[in-house]
Length: 64
Length: 130
Image (tube, rainbow over all chains, first blue to last red; front, top):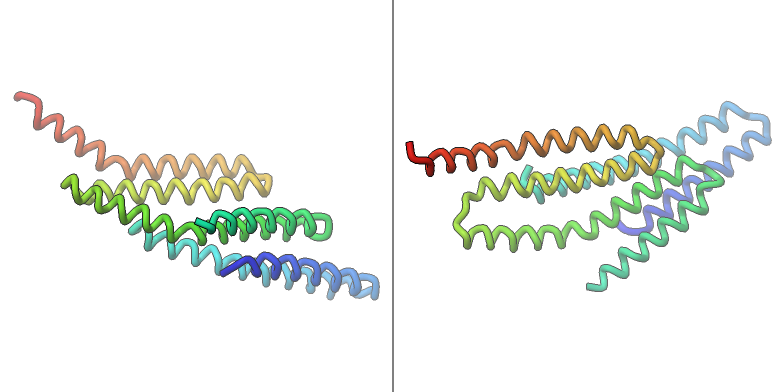
């Protein structure tokens, strides 16, 4: 739960962009789309976990 | 109180990361901004509990009904959450959606505050000579 998750997300973005470009250059457009989508979904799951944590903490603090 | 330097550093790092990522993948830059905001909120949540604990002791000293205090706390929480969500909505370019979230939050706060208003009215009715 620290700053490294920001770097992680940025790194995943860079990696998926590079992989997508390489696959596109190699002529495999459909796999490139899949790789890009997979990166986006991984990051979304990480963010969803964070938001769920936030909701749980706020519920305990504000006695919902 | 050196946590303020941490918060400033996280804000700046998030800004730089979004600027670097934006030309490569613009959808990830928004997610990085959201995560930066979440991390900052997680860091200040502990201080918030301290503030609420001292509020609670003050309320206990005054001898007021603790139900009113709980309602107040919930209203503050709804306000913070709604503000966070509206900020994300307008960051992603959906400011009209943010306005709708704001309207929903206002109505929920209104509904939560109704017991307080009825309590005040009941007190006034008791004070009035019949």
